[in-house]
Amino acid sequence: MFPNAISAPSIQHSRQNLRFFFFFFHCKNSTSHYKKVQIQTNCRHQNHSNLLANLFKSLDGFICDFVDPPLRPSTDPKLVLSGNYAPVDELPPTVCEVEGSLPPCLDGAYIRNGPNPQFIPRGPYHLFDGDGMLHSIRISRGKATFCSRFVKTYKYNVEREFGSPVVINYFSAFTSLLATVARYTVAFGRTLSGQYDVRRGTGNANTSLALFGGKLFALCESDLPYAIKLTSDGDIITLGRDESFGEPLMSMTAHPKVDKETGEAFAFRPSISRPFLTYFRINADGIKQPEVPIFSIAEASLVHDFAITESYAIFPDTQMVINPKEILKGKPPLVVNAEKVTRLGIIPRNAEDESGMMWIEVPGLNMLHISHAWEEDGGDTVVMVVPNLSPVEHVLEHIDLVHSSMERIEINLKAKTVARRPVSGRDLEFGVVNPAYVGKRTKYIYAAEGGRVSSRAGLVKIDLTLSTPNSDDCVVASRLYDPGCYGGEPFFVAREPDNPAAEEDDGYLVTYVHNENTEESKFLVMDAKSPILEIVASLKLPQRVPYGFHGLFVSEDDLQKLL
Image (cartoon, rainbow, N blue to C red; front, side, top):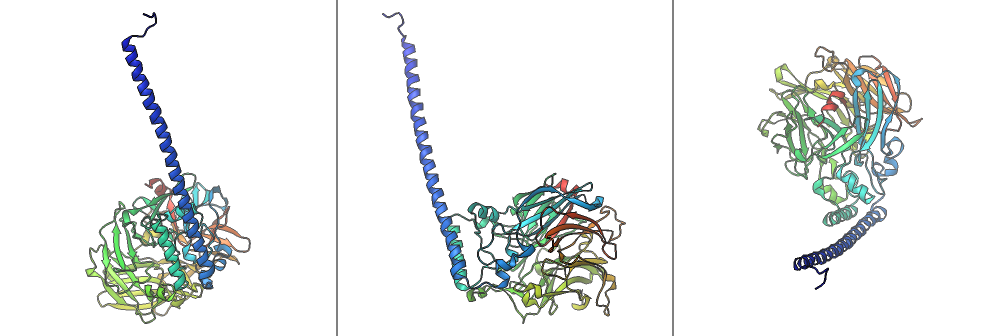
């Protein structure tokens, strides 16, 4: 009828197109409506979360301002974070000025860990509570790059998101019973509302570093290790929490021991409930082996460090104990049990259970760190060198009043007898050896001397072969820093690490040193064979390095092999 009439099939096709158009239009509007609802829901959830975060933050402030009693000197942030203990900001890789010549064996990186709170505390704060910050020197062909980065723990990331501290500080939170109950009520609220998942860890990774199983870790004993890596330009990247070493709520020592010959690592997990100590081995591939729970420890004690020999692992059971009942008195749970007789526990290092555990009483031996241990007399005698703390009751509250005298402890495993003699009466801590000699007999130990807990006035070199029943000081070399200058733990770097004929002390001692008069920090390289520990190179750092804890040198070859 019409010249331009549409055929029936075309009309049918058009109807299908119209139906598709209306269907698409309806879906598009429905999706848009759904997105609007979703956005509104997310906004309401975000607003609700922000309201809760602000509420908890306000409650934290109320507890600090109105519930806490006057702070003790050891937990007053105005005192604890003064001088070179004050925190610094992150610093990206920055070229350093080199004075002298950096030895080729230092190609790689020296990294030191330490506490550096990302937020200035409003309430109580102990030196051990700060977020972990790594200060690294990346060295290549005589040039050096410095970098400072936080360890990006779960705790750090959550607190950064909320803009304030969230996790309770273990070493300083227990100011009174009321304040403790209030703080844990707020913490429970944060957990219940989903703002913090304790299964993902509460540690700050601020204590030490370790290299084993092809990975580099930042550690603290209140959490599992955090894997890190260094980029070619010297930056530090946190890879994440490694849960292969324990269940989500578990932890691991900050002082694992690595046998350079076998590639194995040995570690333990402290606990405030039975078993109070659990020992385990990590094979050369980084795989954790079955745990060995130690039930022969009667109460939780502060086991910060341990030692290995070629055949044994040695654990201290000191007078520093953890008593949760003290919290009910409004006091910190870490106390000193003066009636307790201190012991050393010796277990075969490849043990499958604790049946071979031997406990030897060593009265009055209290330590945080063990400098070294080895075997003599065909394995019948275990020898340890440790800084013995006295008076031990000041360790947590007034640690600067504690004197650490180095002792040699000889344990006859057959007769179960102990012989003790002084190695040095000087105030020495942070004792280290050539890493290739861990678990083996050594001639030399290097230690930090004098000063305060993590700011020491100098270094010494100890010759253990001079230790006799009539000797009282085996120091054969020393260096006092310039007036107003303080450093920390030294680390030994061998000149020829792959040369089996190299002398034990043929290498260098490295550490950070801070000048409190000029507010400048340096990285020092000292000749370990020199009677004055002569400085062969000094790096002026682009930023102040706060006093901290333990460090590690990682060779360029090992850096390239990191997983």
